[in-house]
Image (cartoon, rainbow, N blue to C red):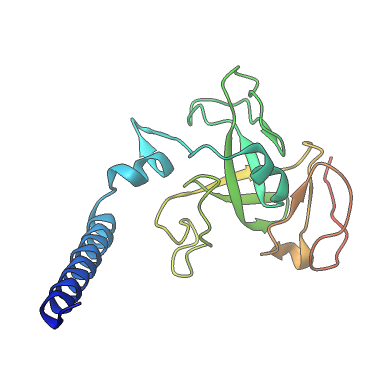
Amino acid sequence: MRSGMKGLIWLLVIGGVLVLSGCFGMHGKHHRQMKCANCQGQGMNAGGMTAMPMAADQAAQRSDLLYVCNCGPECNCNSVSVRPGDCACGKPMVPYHVVKVEGDEVLLCTCGANCACALDKNDGSKCGCGMAVKRVSLKGTGIYFCNCGGSCFCNTVSGEPGACKCGMPLKTIN
């Protein structure tokens, strides 16, 4: 291959890399300023929270997911489960991931099950991605959870008794 052709190929490769890196950089800037269309499925949508769908086998492997009623603040059914299903209102429950356990309450990231952020270190009412944290009481639900020391970041919940990844036995409050 001639050196002119090699130079042209390298120029095209470098140009492609620059264009792609610019696109990714713009997406990050746009994402920080306002929610982008690709991320809307993980955040606010028409005034209510929605979550990205997750495959059943992915959800079964997770010990930090809770399915909760998402009908809005006017709803008082307080449905919560470790398995997908419908809430007492008849609407599908939404999977959120646990970011902290405080007493018998869990704090849930409202970005959806696919989000992997943690509790915001500067604002305990938000998760690391900036969305509001949802508080859900586990009292009387039959759900087992880790609560080492009264405040726990193990984020383990289960429908059955067992041990947490930290070694503590999971507990339930009736």
